[in-house]
Amino acid sequence: MKFWRLSFLFLLLTLVLAGCGEPFLSTLKPAGEVAETQLTLLFISTSIMVLVILVVVIIYLIVLFRFRRKKGEENKIPKQVEGSHKLEIIWTVIPILLLLSLSVPTIAATFKLGDVKDMDKVDKDGNREALVVNVRANLYWWEFEYPDLGIITSQDLVVPTDEKVYFNLKASEVKHSFWVPAAGGKMDTNTDNENKFYLVFDKEKADEAGNLFYGKCAELCGPSHAYMDFKVKAVSRDEFNQWATAMQKNKEEVQPTSDLAKQGQEVFQANNCIACHAVTANDARPETARTAPNLADFGNRTRVAGILEYNEENLKAWIQNPEKFKPGNQMYKEANLSEEELDALAEYLMGLKVQE
Image (cartoon, rainbow, N blue to C red; front, top):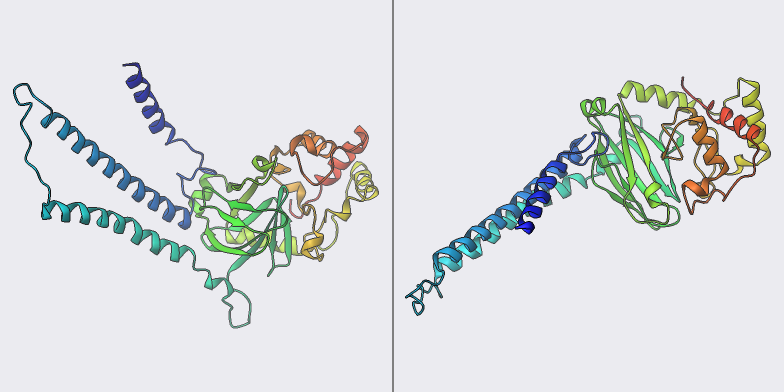
């Protein structure tokens, strides 16, 4: 009896928890065309499985109660159906129909979502019509390059809503997997080849989520795999154009406006941070030379290191001891900076803004 009570409790919890999920993260609250298509396929496959289970359970119960051994009928043999062509046709046709009902929409969706030929479509002036983003996964951070716009940024991906955004995916050191749960399924980033796909971010869903979606790495890539997050800012096309224009103009380092920030700039340069971190969105270095996140517009980031709440204390803690927050990262184990230097660095970095 205890077993059945526990089973009922777990079933109830499963049904309740299945309805949980935030609009910026949940796969059950699709925020675009790709996610909606994939959720439909999930419902179809789940419905088929539930139907099969119900039919099997019903048949089992019928056999169990109707043909159970009764007193005085121990030697009675039920009617045999061996060799029945009718039954053989039924239980052959039914699985075929079930497979077709699942395979046809799955194949159709696979070809539809895998169609990226419009990625290279150009207008009469030779300019690419679609927005393309080169995604490069690193240990443990994400780089986003807009090749047609001449923009490189990190950790915060900015995209327009209600249009297809195409992605070229690649990894630097080990395999990762690019995943925005609310927008669509994951896609691997490999070191030896590029994967391509597209996502669409619905404006109404983006407004509901505060124009911010969470991205994850969905491939076990090392000790800080769970901390390899990024954020997606889904905004209107006008807002995206304003952001892109501001980033394109960011060809020189944003100059600090306070004495403390100027001290931070000096600390940044004295410790040769610029050797790894670019501070402008127009980073001309080749991909192999970009070994750390681009810090252009760092002052408008939504997280520190992709995982910590964006504030001065967390920024200083990260600078001083990145290994504590992301074990195995390629920055350094621990810095030896004074409190004054940390204050100055935080002031400088938080002032790197291309837009107010």
